[in-house]
Length: 216
Ligand SMILES: O=C(O)CCC(=O)C(=O)O
Image (cartoon, rainbow, N blue to C red; front, side):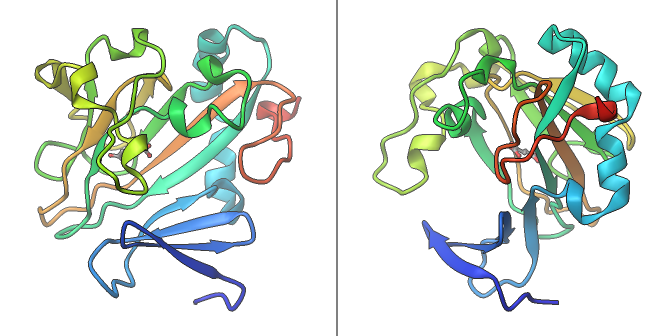
């Protein structure tokens, strides 16, 4: 159901709707009603919220962040539907977050694959070694979002690795890792949630509330 509270806007012709602090991105074809991404999504469904506390995710995150307690930073549901799910251009997450956060190095992601993901349905791709480079320059192509896509002069696309994984897999990756994915032109969806953590007791990106993992 469409919310009457939604605020619609377009960036580079792509439709976004904000409902309170939740942003919904639509697929890029003009007039498409197909949802592409919802962020943050954990609070919209108890099953997503429960994932935030799953020890198979939280324990490695504590190790990556180097803290005994961690909190959620954001949670994105990426639907990448069969047939016309759009891809994600090469980017790092850190440039999106650097103005909202003083600990951008401590925002590791985990992608939880809900479907088998392979090259055909647009699996996640990462650029080997790019996580060691810090925040890289964006493109300057004059578009509104261009600055968020990593300049091709600053990474080596030949170092990309396609992460083909079965449903249920976890992919942990750095906020500095250059990553992206191809469109999904196959008959199979490639749905996933990407959870991003941070040190405990820190507020989330979009709603400013603290969502500590495991309740402490
Ligand atoms: O879902 C994907 O393939 C990529 C997602 C991504 O890069 C992101 O959410 O920042």
